[in-house]
Image (cartoon, rainbow, N blue to C red; front, side):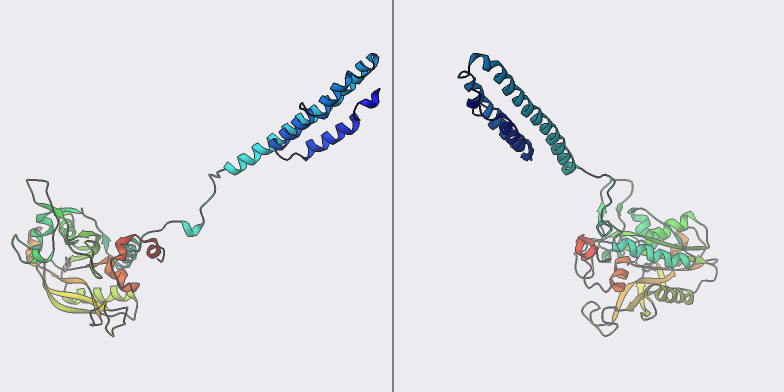
Length: 346
Ligand code: DAH
């Protein structure tokens, strides 16, 4: 009574379709339990074996087992295929390409102040100057005394000094200007000297539009035979044209610095208002960059250079201030803020 059994060929082909249709391991598991499970077509067929004539049971049982084995084999194959596929997908989604480069616009670059320092160095190196460096932590002697600023000299009050407490034997401080590098250069080299000394300096200042407590300066020093104030003025003029371009002018105004005599303040046309007067230049049309003058004989004597034989000039100005003028930045505080919206513009 084989007609009591379900049609095994149809059962197998329906089961194979369900197996093929499974797109994930979970779907395959569902198909498997509905076909091969307790309520599946093969379980039902087996139950009916009992109602068959005894001699029909063995061949019917064998064809049920063969049909079931065919479906099991198909499920096994499908499972293998799906699990390699899912593993590949998993690997792909976890993949990190270590050779992948970041997009160029996300790469870092030198800070504006560093770029400006390098630009200034290039201009002076092209004029024949060498680049010298000195320590950020200085002795009182290098920062003040050798520069003709003895203890209790009023000029110390202008440079709000950050003193360090390392104890005896010497007073130490964070250098308030790059001028001590002049001293170190003259102590380590014999004239003729044509040097610039760029670097960071520190002052106990409250930040405002034109001041920050840590900033950068560039110092210049020339010591040779027969150097005059005309050489100083010519050098400042040549530098201003080379760095800022033809539309920015420089002017020197009489000033006082203990380490130079005579001394002058060095100003350039305010690039923000082009000389008309604005908030940044306090309506003068000029921005003060720094100071300069003829090296004081007392300074030459302090480092063992004979002022009768040698003369020289020096200058010192703010690197951040140069960047401010060059790029027309109205507030200096952005230089130290590390705000990427500012940094990325340069
Ligand atoms: N050291 C001075 C300052 O920080 C700037 C300066 C003025 C440097 C005159 C010089 C100079 O070399 O001759 O205010």
